[in-house]
Amino acid sequence: MSDPCLMEIESLSTAANLLPPVVPLTKIESPQNVSTSLAISNLNGDTKENLAHLINNYVQSLSHTKMHILGFPVNLDFDYEALGQLLHFHINNAGDPFMGNCFALNSTSFELCVLDWFASLWGIQKNEYWGYVTNGGTEGNLYGILVGREQFPEGILYTSNESHYSVFKIARMYRMQCVKVATSSSGEIDCAHLKASLLAHKDKPAIINLNIGTTMKGAIDDVDLVIQTLEACGFTPDRFYIHCDGALFGMMLPFIEHAPRISFKKPIGSIAISGHKFLGCPIPCGVVITRSKHTNSFSRDIEIIASRDATITGSRNGHAPIFLWYALKKKGLTGVKKEVERCIANANYLYDQLRDAGIGVVKNEYSNIVVFEKPLDDGFARRWSLSSSGNIAHVVVMQHVTIEMLDLFVSEFAQKRFLWMHYGQKEVGVFKLCELG
Ligand SMILES: Cc1ncc(COP(=O)(O)O)c(C=O)c1O
Image (cartoon, rainbow, N blue to C red):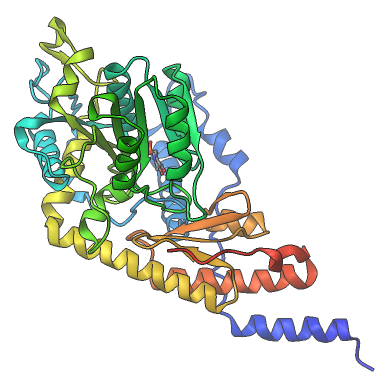
């Protein structure tokens, strides 16, 4: 009589044969060897050849790794070859971009065009806004929340418990009282809980951080409902400040039909995005826009740079605004819209594939983030650079993510899951997700 266990293994290997082959990893130097050769220990400096060899190796490993980046909201599909010559220059935008500075190697003319583009996207007139190109979403949040805090030094910061970790760090840095507001199962701020929290602190102004796309689930806080809630609790516009953390979705939503509108036509104070997320950039960067009336409280004229110090850092990356400008100028509004639509369509495709493979999956409307049960195998999660939280993980379907990558990912996931269920941890099937949106 045949051994049932062996039969199961046989049928498994037959099933495995039907699945696309797992692409073998090309040989990459072990981390120990790499770090030894990278060590800066040669007294007389290294040869040009040796340096070129080390960098080539690194570039190879980057090119390989790029094919499997699924879990992070970064667009890796860009071509800035034409800007390579800029690396021959140090470009520095210290100071207020609207004033320029006395360091002539600056790119503030590019920066202003980028800021104008975002100001128009978010519905604020040229003469009514102020902003700058930041080092990323975190700096944009640091700036926006600082503007709120300067306006209301005694204000309380309210933000949902699914906010990015930078928001809680900022509350600690600024020593602000921070109220964590509950969320719905889809990840949006729970306005009933917000209302109760506001009523419990009616005597203090409210500084609200809203998520225009939470990091894990891509949930969009309802700006209109939050404003209504503030009004219902007796908070008039002179007693609240709203910062919108739109790291990824801030520049996607304006291109999605029927999606909620994030706009300065509403009583919000600032919006921040990460430039390297949807737009794509080889270096981290971002944009923050606020109303010009808010900016004077902590800016100071600085003689040595012949400018106004109004930003979080002193020296500012002068290359980043040129990358952002180049991407926007090349794509145009139509190009950006097409990319947004393709990412959402591919995210819907991934959702269907995972569901059809029997894997617990959910996705918010207007989102390119597909949330699913956390894979039980760390190696698998690392191979696809998945990001996880508790019992969920996600794929962020960005521009470099092709249907081929998604098919390979789903087939590997299904294959691994089958093995976990039969020979590994049995609780895989216990994971339950309610339908969202
Ligand atoms: C919602 C949200 N806010 C802020 C950030 C921080 O952005 P950055 O990494 O550009 O500082 C992220 C990053 O993923 C994010 O998802």
